[in-house]
Image 1 (cartoon, rainbow, N blue to C red):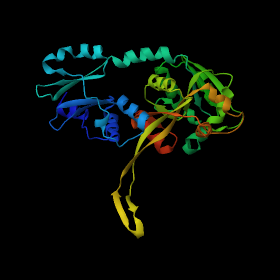
Image 2: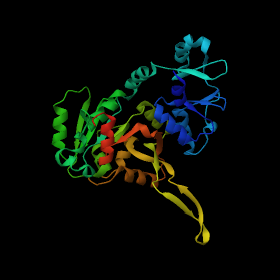
Image 3: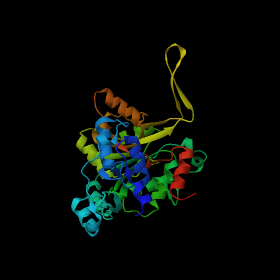
Length: 356
C-alpha cells in the first residue's frame, strides 16, 4: 500500500466527530488510524466508537481525541508475516504495519470478517420478520408512477423493492410482510411469478392508511420484534448490530438515523443587538441526523394503532413519546443510506447501481 493510499485511512486527534465520519464514509472500511504531527501512530477510531459516543451524547462537534482508542494493535514491519494470524486472534478488522519510527508503512485488512459475520447473522435474524410499507402512490416520482407502482421502479436490473428484500436476506431475514394498496396486483404478480427463497405475505389496505396505519393490520400476525422499512430506501449497514442495539436498549422502538451534511449555498449573517451584525459565515455546512424510514419495533406498538385510521410512523412515535416512553436512535453514516423518494434522489440511486 502506497503513502497516498495510507493517508486515506489516517486521521488527527483534533478532528471533529463529523469530520471523522466523513472520512470513514469515503474509505468504507469503518476505521481510521490516528497519527500525530510526526506521522506516528497514536490510536484508532472505528465507526463503532463513534456510534457509541453519539448514542451516549449526540454531540457531533467533539474532538475525536475524547473517544479514540489510545492502545492500538499494530505490528512492526519485520513481523508483517504474522499479520493475519494477529488479526484473527484479536478479531480486528485491520492491522497497521509500522517502521522503526512508528510510522505506518502498510495496512492489512481482515478479508474473512465479512463472510464470518454473514454466517453469524443468518442464525440470529432468520425468525425476525420484516414489514415493508409498499402501498403509497409515489406522487413525488411522477411520471414513473403513472405506469408502475413505486416499489417496482427498476434500480439497475431489479425493482427497488426486490433490492430491499435482497439486502435483508443477506443478513438472514426470511419472512416479509408487504403492506399494499396502490397497484397492488402488479406487485403481487411480480413476486408470485419469480423464484425466491423467502416467504412473502401480502397485507392489503382497503384505503390508503399512510406510512403507519397499515401496521394495525398486523396485530394478530406478528409477535415479538420486527423490522419496519419504507419501500424507497436502502440501508447498507449491519442489521445484526442494529437488532442487538434495539434488544439491549430496552426500548420498544428504535429509529435508524443517518448523518446528513448540507452545504448552505449562501453566506449566513448572524444578527446582534441594535441592528448590527454579530458574525458572518460564508456558505457553511450544517450537520444533522435525519430519519431514514427504517425502524426496529416490538409488536406491543401495534396494539396502540387504531384500525382503519391513516397515520404516519413519525406520528405513531410522537404519540408514543407523549406517554413518557423513550425511542432509541441508531446512527449510521451518510453513505450507508440511499433514498429514492424524490426524482433527484432516484437518479442518484440509479447511478450508484451503474444504470446511468
